Amino acid sequence: MLDSFLNYSSLLLVAFPAFGAFFLMLIPNSNVRLTHSIAQSISFTTMIVAILSFVFFDPENSNYQFRQTFEWLNIISINKIISLDLGVDGISSFMVMLTGIVMFTGVLSSSSITNRVKDFFILYFVLISGVFGVFVSIDLFFLFFFYELAVVPMYLLISVWGSSSVFKTFSRTKDYGALKLTLFLVAGSVLIWVGLLSIFVESNATYFNLIDIKNNGGLSPKFQTFIFPFILVGFGVLGGLWPFHTWSPDGHVAAPTSVSMVHAGVLMKLGAYGFLKIGILLLPEGAQEWMPILLILGTINVLYGAISAMGQHDLKYVIGYSSVSHMGYVFMGIGTLHHLGVTGSVMQMFSHGIMTALFFSTLGVIYEKTGSRDINVLEGLAKKMPLITVFFVIAGFASLGLPSLSGFVSELLVFLGLFKTHPVFGALGVIGAAITAIYILRLIAKVFFGPAHNNQNLLTSVTIKDKISSVILVFFVIAIGSVPFPFIAKIENSVHNLLLLGLGS
Image: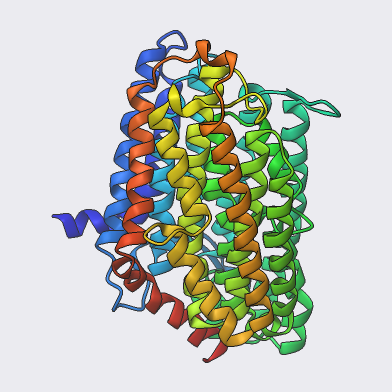
């Protein structure tokens, strides 16, 4: 019975959030408690399916698993077929589990949403359905369709439920953050769509899916070298690749807590996932030509993001730039085109998603209880918020790569891949990790263990939902860092097959 259920898991992961959005439309706007209860139930069920699809994924089977195919468009005159073709390999099953975890914990962290709650969760579930759709889509048309489905709701989620910030020298309204994010991501989408259509036409494949296009061949080295920059920049924008990253910190600052968790936790991973599934698999010669550029830009991500985070005074900006920095390790790992580096980049995608979701979950509680995100105002919080302090410190230690936490394992694999292929970039990556340790430790010392500030009389107890959300995230941060091999075993064969099919190595 479980096997029959799992066979449909890739479809259910897309359908459950979409069904949740539709079902919520039927709920009266005034019934806020019921809306929250339904959102929590649907997100919890989806998380369980996502975790099961990872746990029961067979790493020895190199084919896509839990596959479901539904023909959508058959153009007989030109022999072209587009299908809703869904399934997972080791890489996408890992990202699916990440999405399920962040989805549920994000819903738990949305208890502070009181304005138009039903509308918020409808858009939130549409976005999540799109993210799941990208990770389980084998057909390129539907991969792009779900990609757009994941991007569009972000504008409304930020502009309606976000917050504006006023700083000493400048201000950032929520409309500014929402519009900037949308313009950047839509511009990247245009490049992706041009690249995907060009690949499909040039390959002369019958089906629009990855497998048929790869098996059909027909992509000359010259074509691959020409079209790869469209994929590089298009997906790089969503991944926060320097210099196309500026939308991300501004989007973080303006977004509500749960949206920041999804934004950093899973949405940015779609960009890196596109590099792996389209860049390396379908454009291997182009990847070999352009990966040195990705390595350079990824290294700038690491160093620039870390230095920028060090100079911020708003907690969300600190974590926003830290997120840009840590995505740099993902790009550097991919840029090695080495088994260790690419495996590390996939691990880093998961680790970064969990720890940044934990960061933003704790920041949401701090802002809700104190009314401030200013580092110069928030001092001595450990005395009043000991549990939140523990959660933030764990996220911070994972961020700086402390052994036994998830960040150490993923960064170690990336560094091993770098030192085997590009030692100079490996050394620069280590310097970035050292800078991360400096600003994280300084931040923890000042905000949580400095002298108590007068604003602490505003603090109240942390809700049970916030505690559950953080505990779930902490569990995975510690589990992957302490017992990494079962997780690596699930993805390393898929990484090997990806490099073998794409690069023949």
